[in-house]
Length: 155
Image (tube, rainbow, N blue to C red):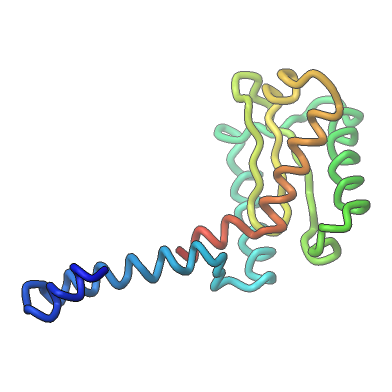
């Protein structure tokens, strides 16, 4: 930092470079302190819009159309975690919706703002037991609760 200040004092640093460095430092600071320029209701609205896009993109996100029992099983685990965890502060605000994407070759899950959680069939088949699935779902709920996606959009 002292070198940067010395360069500025000696006029060896151009204004665009100063602006770039200060913008970079501001972004690093905002991200490191968890700043989020989006409101909680923005998370819900963004999530609803992204959810519609996912629902309308079956080629990219083929939602599982199989057994209602399987869909209920995954959803019930998610709802149980949301309703029993003392650290979930957005229950009743986020709609918390749990969906399965029918893709056995993808071992993944993801969360979008507002509590929309997606788990791929490839991950479900990869996991050994219900506790592992619950851990994955809880992890994704954590992303929603900490509002990671809109926090990343902020930085």
